[in-house]
Length: 327
Ligand SMILES: [Zn+2]
Image (cartoon, rainbow, N blue to C red):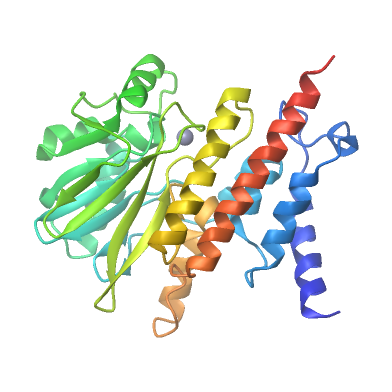
């Protein structure tokens, strides 16, 4: 078996180890008979990568990788680059950038208890003062991202940024899940193309509609071994069970971020769930081999590939769902 076919076999084994479920938008015996040219394109892209388990491909398969999420153990707080930190629980991520004038936090987990444990406790373990959280960007209006926001607003007076459509979406759906904390008060309205600046760091925002009405993606400059490198953060990655209009919007942002990334040359892709960026696994790698290349910086070619795979998976899911809607 040559390397390519070994990778191919490993990928197929992994992908099909996830049991098919019989709900809308997921692979079923019926969908197996629908031609899936975009799935083939997505796989071909993924196989070009030297990472056999190319994470974006999960969006093409049933369950969005949820079974994989369940086996990722809580990695604990971690320093990912000189001034960039992971504060999630292994399933949902919160990220912190320590700027020259305080901390920018991205997402706030489910609720106050998680903020205490993972964000406040995490920063303290890493030697940072949580009272320095000045700015919070919330990627989208689902409770696993905004649920700790009000607590942080009240405790530290942190400024919150969210898009107007997702403030509405959040308020409309508040209380649907008892685990989620109350929605934060409306504060700064994040807009497309805006740069949110704190101290020496400016994070550029892009509205990437699809997962929610106006999820936010970002270009985050971080320092790695003294050098500034940019990470592309994707704030709404899943693309199953969307309305046709949302699938179209998703396709448009993947096209746009491909163009942006060709110019901005991000050095890696991260997201807000570990099943999509493998943050928990990468953190374990950093801990095991701190002198190796940082696994979060996979390079611009890989970042572009990630977006192309998302694009094809979204098109594939749109086609499956269209076929399933036909009587
Ligand atoms: Zn979400």
